[in-house]
Amino acid sequence: METRSSGDKMFDAVNMTLLGIISIIVLYPLVFVLSASISDPAAVLGGDMWLLPKGITFEGYAKVFDNSDLLNSYGNTIFYTTLGTAINLVMTVMAAYPLSKRDFRGRNLLMGVMVFTMFFSGGLVPTYLLVKQLGMTNTFWALVIPNAVSVYNIIIMRTFFQSSIPGEIQEAAAIDGCSELRILRSVVLPLSMPILAVMVLFYSVGHWNAYFNALIYLTDRADYPLQLILREILIQGQMEEMVNVGDSSHAKTLLDQEAIKYAVVVVANLPILMLYPFLQKYFVKGVMIGALKG
Amino acid sequence: MNTPVQSTTSARGLAQAAPAKAPAAPKRRCSAIVKALRRHWQLYLLITPVIGYFAVFHYWPMYGVQIAFKDFIATKGIWGSPWVGFKHFERFFDSYFFWRLIGNTLGISLYELAVGFPIPILLALMINEVRLKGYRKFVQTVTYAPHFLSTVVIVGMLLMFLSPTSGLVNLAIQAFGGEPISFMTEPGWFKTIYVFSGVWQQMGWSSIIYLAALAGIDPQLHEAAKVDGATRLQRIWHVNLPGIRPTIVILLILNFGSLMGVGFEKVFLMQNSLNMEGSDVISTYVYRSGILGAQYSFSAAVGLFNSVVNFILLITVNRIARKVNQVSLW
Image 1 (cartoon, each protein chain N blue to C red):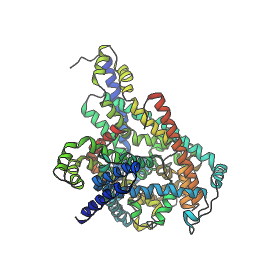
Image 2 (image 1 turned 60 degrees about the vertical axis):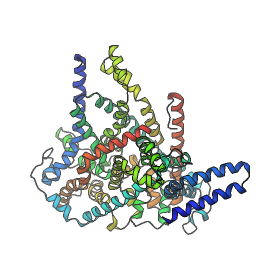
Image 3 (image 1 turned 135 degrees about the horizontal axis):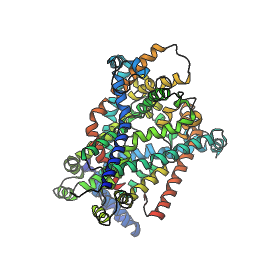
């Protein structure tokens, strides 16, 4: 162990203190929401509750589970996320595997064709018209097909195939008479579980949190995903209230809204909250692989 | 198992037919393609649906963007609608909204670049200096967390905390004797709230890539600097920072490439009729006039203008970076 100078110690102290302050700033709103979700709404509105829950009540959660729109949209989101992620995963492998082969003819051209779409696009309106023309509006297809694969993730996956799966194993399998599809299925994919996990997480968090496609392509409330219902509860109500100031006639509904707001945030992020420890490990791995190629 | 056998034979048939007929020069190329197809037909089969997807959902809209130069009539389709040249572009450039949209779009981007770009670099440099493993892990776990919250939840939380009547921020302002500020309805506050909430949400996540680059710096460089008597700050400045410079440049290029492409999702959710003056950007304008207002051609023109400017910016910045730093995207 090296001896550390006083300047060094000073540096560490300042550095760690600053990082501590940053952590508190990031953490505080999250803790507040969690506490507010099980506190008496009046205490939250009045500012009496600022860190730890006050007047513990689970009314907010009860209201969340009474809200049929919300439960329905929760189910929808689970469905969209599962289907969307499955499509994403299959498409990503289908693109990344051939592109990872160095002797795959047309590899650079195809890669270029895909990468170009990261930097240039036809824009919102032509895409919208296309989806409409294909008859996908008001169906779940509009949420899973127009974003069936992400170029960035193809690049990550391709990099993984190239750098982490020994070419010799694949060659050996080929010499043994394995077809390329068989090599993919029996050799490459079983060795790619870590990156597949990263992909599942990248894609599923994306689907879980998405609202834009649903906003423009869906009109039937019964099909709405969770985020659109959340938008109604968390944003639209409050915006109206702010824009039409001075109207305090519905103080009771305000309290009701207040009670459900925090609980709904917690419930909406529950799956991600529970997965977070895994998410962190795998997501970071994914970013690192992406950074290699950058 | 039937189809593979069939296509192998047909590929073989083609391969035999090709050299017989084609003249000398193209023959070699033709047979090379046929050979590749024959050898890798399964790979081509695998990638075909993906190519189809890109053709339909990315390149077809690029073709469809021609409606920006037409008066789109739904019954006549993209192809049949009459050409009108630059009419929609002129209308956009002359419109009252043009400078407001450009100002807001660039304003938000530059603000974000100035604040949101350096902070993750600083954070990464700071985290990298922490020697206590547990503490380091704690800071990382905490700062990465908000990345996973959805935009809807983030904006919902902003409204909770910034509410003029019950928001914690305003309660604090009042406790110190100030007047409550209606943050979300003030056009002047919009960009600051947008940028700093973005920093709050993304700084940890964006620092990962720099941490990865920092981990790749040769420890011998640090040892040598220590022998020369460099302090911690000097080593950060002269070893770590140059070590991650390529990463910084690449990300900077990408950021410049999206200077005009302020994301729709968050701006749209934070927008309301009172803060429009400071919050209306190109993407929300396209949504309003195109999807809600059904002025397809006009908004396609606005969108195309935006894409083209972005693309030109990206290429220009990339070229400059290549000249100055020998680092570039391609």
